[in-house]
Length: 570
Image 1 (cartoon, rainbow, N blue to C red):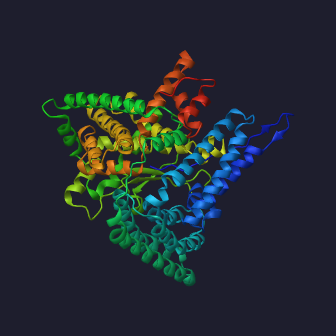
Image 2: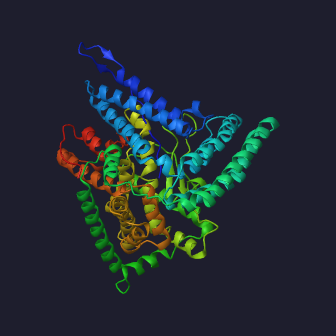
Image 3: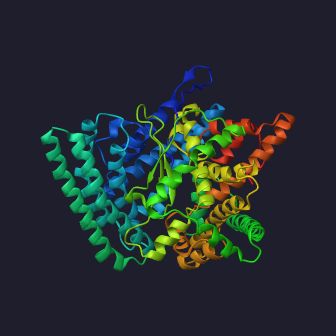
């Protein structure tokens, strides 16, 4: 899930006469100031608390203004990139240009703000939770900012009504789930926190209760509108098409592999992992089919009440394994807090890591979220959801989210070489690293010789392989969500309910192939790095150097770790 964006860096540009210039450094400051002005809740998450009392303006007028700013910034960064820059600045300029191009693609071409109600209904809960969950200022001060944001929530949901028309049904279905969870979140969790934060300040509490009441009313009205008005006319297509899919990959991941070859790579990897899964299942029980073996493995799962405690149990052992085996330096004694995924964020995600922002000076809490069952689900859906969290698979999830995956990568943020790299990331890097970690840990001996551990790792690999193939087919080949779900069941050995969630995620997250894509690129980079180092190669050193560079696209990572390298990323 979700790692926050950006890095500190001071750099000097050298003019023809050799005098220091700060043109690019000034641009970086301007870019992020405009970014967080448009996305104040992201500013809070990054640790910039001058944005705490503001909420996003999602009106059509604000979108048009943002497009104008991005167009001007694009011209400016292109001009700066044409001048001499040092190696680090070249990387950062490429990252920012990609970010701008990707945002313009979303706003102008894909028009996501007109096609998807999910960002509108997810924003209020996320923005308010960001003020509650981290103790970066006195509670009463944060409550004042919360009141200001609560007052702006009705305008966000009004913008949804004005902007969104004919979205895909899949988007509206998920928005309904998110909105329904948000109302309860404001009524219960937010209200409880606010009463404690207000203390004896009755005026502050009264202001909260009025603002929260209006916010709840607007969320509930939005839920009714989504169900009764938008859902019946949600007949749009989720497919973004081959051209936009390729551009999105180019801008966000710096991947320019032709789509037919990209799909062939994913299908080949799916076949390889599928065959390995079948062989491993045969070792566990040759009398059962691979699917039956996986079902027997997942039968030993936690109950709904034990889900969070079960996620905590093996974290320390996993952390100690990677330290004992000298696989990576863990630069902090901090630990993540394991807790339930907030209701507003339950849009098909089973687990995620939410660390503090790179510039958060005080509140250091990192949250390892695990998604619980929903009360309205029937017994079959609840059982299938819980089966995902069986012990061997839970270990793989914890490797991915915490050690040495997302949490360890976050712990390196202070070592990132620039502001740009502290505040931005490429999914094929951060998700690729976390997914790479699962396989690498098994290769280095985690789980011993237990084939169940190997089967769990392979199922997680198959899950990402299926995302890879399904994402491309959903958006460029006319595949339906129902047909995509069959891929997850038949080739990924997923429970039907989870397979549907995964396929539906592909409808709104087109390029979620970045897990497998990033993993394959990292393995290729590691092999080339090993060849360059020869006898001096050290796996821990490679991992440490990789993590210190930040979450840049792997193409740029190759420039950082293998200067003058011209080999392809795959």
